[in-house]
Structure formats: C-alpha cells, structure tokens
Length: 408
Image 1 (cartoon, one colour):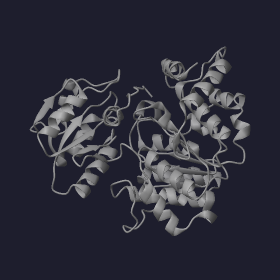
Image 2 (cartoon, one colour):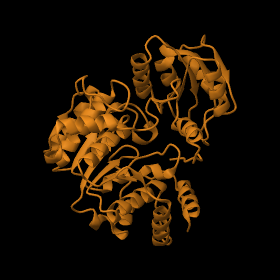
Image 3 (cartoon, helix red, strand yellow):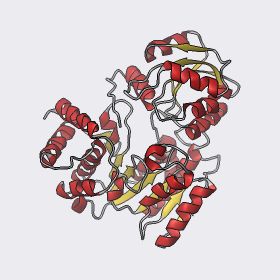
Image 4 (cartoon, helix red, strand yellow):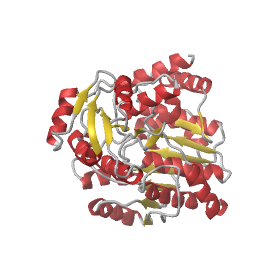
C-alpha cells in the first residue's frame, strides 16, 4: 500500500469501535516483534483526564535534550495522523507509515477478532520506535488506563496527571470509578507520580499503590520563576510531573539549567495556542479543562473578553464547559464540527441557556473558517474551543495542510 491507501485502511478500522481489553493488543505486539524488542528501553506511561499531552511533550523534550533518542506516542492528532508518532521530535515518515501498516494488515488479515484503530496505531508506533533504536519512549493512554491498549506495555514510571468526569460511558459515573480505571496502569515495582487530584481519586490511587507496594508520589507545581513554552499557570503542574518523571528515567543526565531550557523550548499545538496575536486555540472539551482555560485566559489576557467560536460532540458536558467559560466571553458563535457525533447548533444553544449564558450575544455559522474570519474582522480576540476537531481544522487552514478527520 502507498501512504494514502494505508491511512485509508487504518481509518476504516474505526468501524470496529473501541474495545477495551489487552488480549488482542498483546498478541499484536508479540507477533510484530514489539514485545521482545522493547526490552531494555525506558518507558514512561502517562494517564489522566487532562494534561496528558502536555506532560508527554515536556517529558519527551527533556529526555531528548538530555541526549536520548526518544519516541512519543500521543492521541488524537490535530491535523495529520503522523503527529501521533514522533522520533526525537520528527513525525513518522509517510513511507514508513505505509510500509509498517502494510505489514500489520497482512499479519491480522485472518484474525477472528480484528485489532482496533488504536491497537494498530500503538503497534505501528512502537514498531517504529524499535526500528529507530529509541532509548526512551513516552506513551499517552487513549482512554482510562486499566484496559487501555498502552497498558499492555510495561513501563518504568507511571504518571496520572489529573482526574475529573469524562468518558463516563466507558470508565464509570463517579470519580472513584474513574480513578480505579486510571489506577489500572499501576504495576508492581513501578513508581507512580500523581498531580493535584480530588481527594476521592487520590484515595483510590493511593490504596492501589499501597496494595502493590509501590511509591505514590504527589508532585507539586514548579515555582513561578520556572518558565515553560506552554501558556497558563497550570503548565507548571504539568512541567513538574514531567521533570520528576524524567529524573526517575534518566536523572544522571539532567541538570537544572538543562531542565529549564527544555521546559521553555517545549511546544504543543492546541494548548492555548496564539496565532497572529488575536486568535487563540484550545482543545478544552470538558468542564475541568474549560476551567483551566478560563484561568489561563484571565492570566494571559487580563481584563479582555473573548468571542468564542464553539463546537462540540455528543456525550460531552457542554453546559458545564460553557458555564466555566462565561466570565471571559463577550459573544459566542456556534459551528458544527467535522464529526458524525457533532452536536447541532440548536443543542449547543440550549446548553448555553442552561449554563446561565442566555443573555450572551450569539451567532450561528455553517462552517468554521468563515466564522473565524468574521469575528476577527470585528476586532478583539477570538477563542476557538470545545473540540479538538475545531482546533485541528483551524490549524490545518493556517498551516496550509489537509485536515484529516478521525473518529478516535
């Protein structure tokens, strides 16, 4: 298969849906040689409701700057699938993607239970990391932890960044339920680092760590004088987790000067990203992330309001997201996202009323890019949030790249 054919085949496997469990992915990793070839490589495993991508980005940059060849696996992508798989900061080449997916397709052609999109993506990433002799690998969970495909790989350090209600249809309806799923990444002999978690979640994870006889280390934010390349005071929490994780993986190579440089040099698209001084992009798509976004806005743009361009998918607490953002909004434009699961403008408008924002000026647009152009012409600052689909489509436009829609 060429690159386009291989990616089309990979996206076609999304019809198999999400299947939580480790048997199938463990078989896939064994049969592609990944299980054996990962031995001896340092692995960092990152879970959490929010902040995973930022912690992964900080960690990878620290380890790369320390002289290690790094592999980074994250999801979802914003513009192109290849963003999910990077070696020392470079996206996996199209030729390698096509070649490895061709081999995987041939391997699983007669399997009774076909691997899912995410399982294949993990196998592709880790096969590439091994082929490229990566010394340190950073893995972001897709969803949850206990039954997430990434949990089929043994790590040297585990991280749980944050915890709030999200993906309840898969992970449970309470914080304790969700914490138990996240705690599933804990393994005997592997220390776990945790961010600022709610008491119930901290209790569940602490008890699991105690049962396994492993250290559970609560990491506190870095001092304010430590600067990061990602905006917002919350990034000092994410950076602190990354520093502690990197120190436990390769502490002998790290210096305070080097750590500071790496944190300041880290970039991660779609996290309060500013374009041309007046357009801000943020992937916040749950209430906790929206609260963080609001605090970041108040810090970075004090006294200013945003015209929000908003779209969302089903099964998200849209009312909670909008309620969190209301204090910094001057108006809202609702747009449909490029997803089969998109909410209608009418549904989002109802959520705005339920959030207490019924008096806020609002508009509707059939498409994202005309909405952005219209709000920017009016002056002031524009904020695109509510869905990574919106952020990806916006970035694709400004980068001049084709936006690849993905269900997962």
